[in-house]
Image (cartoon, rainbow, N blue to C red; front, side, top):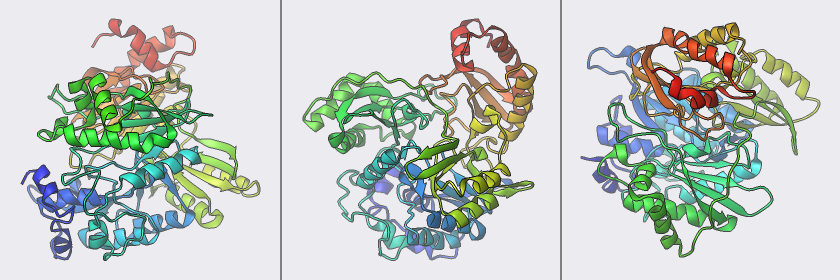
Length: 530
């Protein structure tokens, strides 16, 4: 059964999930596994343990946390789950959620039920719906806006509660089996929304299907549409795209505008080829003007021309700052992996801080976290504890992103998270030799071309091409407003730093004052051999 038929005939995402969940098998059928995604769960297999056609079935469970905020109590519940359902770790996603890997089928119901008891849901974290809404983690106001948008676009089906919570909703939801926004077949593909504050593009707002940019001091919001990182090797009709400015709208009509965009995509997005189903392809097929007209026709009014946007800041909110509720501190988490491994005891240190000081926690789209609400008296001790898990001060290491990739992701062709430390070590050595060790070079690495770690608008993007080898993309803007381009590949993991050395040496010798590596490459790329 094709996926569109499966969705429309699933009894609003129920399918055979409840029946198969109660069976002793360690896996779900293909159709049920597709529906699981709408409930925040992916069926995977541990590819390190494959033996021929025999698979070691495991599951990934992902939370939906609009704006990424958790209370201390919720964080502790999430931390507890890592010990008895997965591999002893939690991972922060680039969409401000938590996910657990290596969960066995028999533990799925207890995991989801326990999360909901703590008022943390997994619904909307995956599937062909509006995914978890991300927002600048330094702005409580934008966090509240993310919750408002996420609540409006959460599925109305009660299937989630029927399957996982015994028919008793514990997290705010509206039960209406008609699904007025999504219809019987939901959306053609996932739909991502990001909210940015003025001048601060820490959420990579141009990489989303729909970007929301607030303006300080007024009630106007700029809408961007048509971003998306995913592409496929050997298919030139698939490509990354940055969102285009669509228009300015009043704050009090924002939800109405987003719904109009979502419904136009629902009704006209490509349902024949999932590789071409994201909003970006509809906009490019129609042209931006026609798409805007379709949205405005549904609204019954016209948007104002979009404001000109500038982005002096693109980095994550790390380090200490003073807020209205006390001190906040952004804590870098390499690849978003909260775990204890060897000498690194990140998970233990974070839990001790949360357990004793009870801060508010906000996850960031750059796979880090922020503690907020810290008193003057508590700040010194927390700073000492964080110093024990610091990855250092090198901006390359702190800013680098990687997707999970092998061994759990079914789409990965090679490693990313596991390969990143080696690549960073090698690049750090080259940068130090060239006197560039303090430069802020944006590095992102993925195990396949789907772009979960947003490699295509980074200064250096490493995209998995085959086992142990990557395509190198260079020249993205440091502020996230320009795509990079393919330069060479596939390049083996051990050869990445030396492949980049000549360009980095040229950058060190002939860059303009204050010029980032991405902007430098963009300026001189016509003279760069491929």
